[in-house]
Length: 286
Length: 286
Image (cartoon, each protein chain N blue to C red):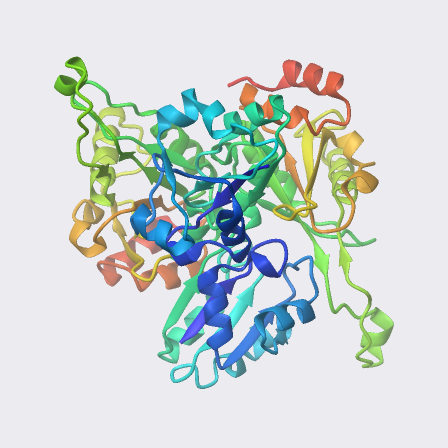
């Protein structure tokens, strides 16, 4: 059996009791470690689970999945995923491949950022489609997120923006020389995301959002140290100290917002007065 | 401290290790039991947790929350919620009240149907806003869900439809006579939902969806017995035997769907041929 086990969002104790039983008993345990991270190192997981863990990077999952699935028709394999196995990144390919090989699959769900973001006090019913933001480079500034946010805004819905992480990245030079030397991991912050969003608005000028648009920055959602900062996109360009270490996410507010959402998020506001004023002007309207 | 503890979607072992520790140590344990249910009775939870549990019905949570929060500045109170505490139903009011009373609040996240529905193979990125469907009565047939689905469809997004549950309902006669006798709980099925959707399309005639629209019915998502049935809305009007016991949910497909989603869900199709044919005609288009 192939088990896809969600690990939740925070630390080693966020696994479910059911998931922990699966991991303890499985013949082999993999950790998908390229789309999200826990706030603890995988060695902490190993000692907590009492199991050694094989780190599965993107290449392994996408190009060498038969190794993960080896003999899984006869023995149990646990494929652990941060958050929920079907959260932001689904592992549809892996499951389709398992089906081809007649390997039964079972999933152990867990918290995902896509529901955990409700901790901002924003109603999940009021969210439109989720978008991703990647690190811009000098010559690669993909802005399809802008069109998606526009679709949500036109309806009046909030948008959850998931932020890029880069693990096991090679510099161009190391890649060219075939040296397997990797850069330190990078995690996009809310400030970097807000900055990139404003750059694209500057380019596109369609008024989808602007420096005065209200948003909520979120850090380490679901963990003890979770932190929220609510304010304008301009204010959030300067929120890194307040939010602290990764992972970060951002929610851009839609105008179809409820007073309860305003009141709840006010607690996180950089500036309560401007929060209430801008809300009154632009939000809470159908 | 007030802890909001997510219980996940299936049975007593879907609680997280962190959540279980909280429940075992708390001074009082409540179970919110009117917006969703687990697949096991609360007595199973009591024996698994080794704790007695107070069932918190809607009246208690909405009108008598100070009893739940009693002394929570000094002792730990666990308020358990099926799914994620900030899932489909947020308990914003309860937390705002706790803030007023200077009671610290912490959340233990867990799986929610809003991410768990990814088990259909549909990408969560492709979902628009979630809607709710209530049981129609002779003179109450609220159809605001139709407008919400239209908004999602216009953009090309999937819609998750959450289905009504009725617990602790009184008959009109018992209510009039002040008798505290409750009807057996009722859980809307995918077939009932599909039927109501088609009735409203019949009334509104805006072509938002129809008997040939593709959808996926889901039952007991996240549990061992989870079951999916994919087909047209008309086919789903007849899916109750295939899906089995509650809880059910339904996803209406948006046209901005990916081939991988088609291939994954084909496994659940009532009729593979018509699934592929209708998909080719109406879906997979930007």
